[in-house]
Image 1 (cartoon, rainbow, N blue to C red):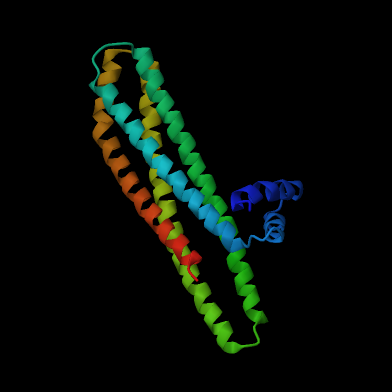
Image 2: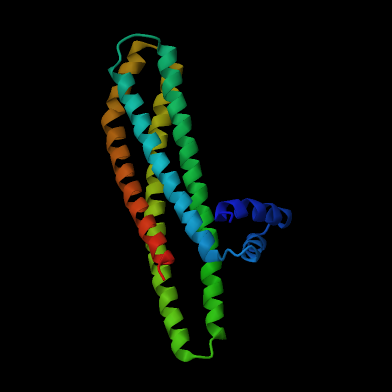
Length: 216
């Protein structure tokens, strides 16, 4: 049996023809995957994207520190190295943001459908139970998104600082420019440390959320 991701690729082609998320979700349901399944799949993918971004930002910081400690050598190579790390970090950040947006899109569709279907119950007790489940799932989701977005926002100042330093080095390929990088090292280290802590918190919450949706 194909995975959710495999069917996603098929359904995405169908949705692209209409340019509508609802068309995509309807197509996926025809393949046997409800919005809840898609939400789990996307949260899982976002968690993985954050883990990769965490590793990349850590790597970028290590390269930055290594350059500040270097004496002499090929300045062009050092610039190319830092610039490559910056570009990779920016790409990881974009991937995280795009995946968070995709999670939010399917969650909005799921909760809207769930709320609308509450009206279809004839049994008041079952309706009340479903309402409580909806409220609890939404509460967990809102906490997850709060942590995901907080971690994503932490990436911006790190990228801005990194970009400034790389750009300055590009325009001043000399030993003095290398030495100037050291003045922002402590700030960058602190920002990356906070970023990693927030990403780890978001990753843990994503794992908890996934398990809550998979629970019977």
